[in-house]
Image 1 (cartoon, rainbow, N blue to C red):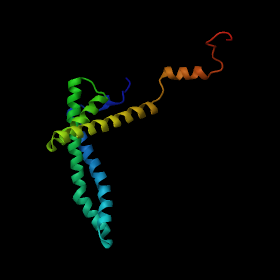
Image 2 (cartoon, rainbow, N blue to C red):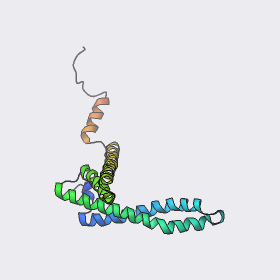
Image 3 (spheres, rainbow, N blue to C red):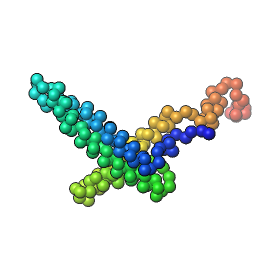
Image 4 (cartoon, rainbow, N blue to C red):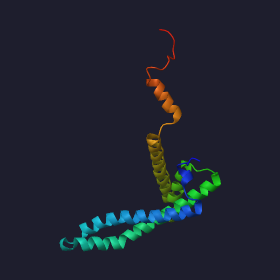
Length: 166
């Protein structure tokens, strides 16, 4: 039995949502910790840089982690819902989920803000999915058919495919 790679390896949907929330919370905390440690040190007086950095990280990094977790949870809910509705997992689910998440999170600011946030979310997820597909194709091992074609193209002992001179 061969193991498939890609989206088929992901957790089933109820657990995927919890996974995504936890992963997003960790990413937000780590990124927020780095960002706010630098910002806190720069804003602190000269003698208290380390204390200012630590204070800023303690106050703001969990907030950013929580915001990332909310985004990740809503995104995962939309992604699982689209997977169930469409009965397939493809990049379109992520793109539509990104747009729906952006629009949902900006709904309180009004329909115009929700529409622009949805467009930004969809474009960002399309870029991320496009980069994932591009890197997947770049670094994927060649198929057996491609390997045979490459060997025949550069093999001087291969029989000629065209007869005679033109």
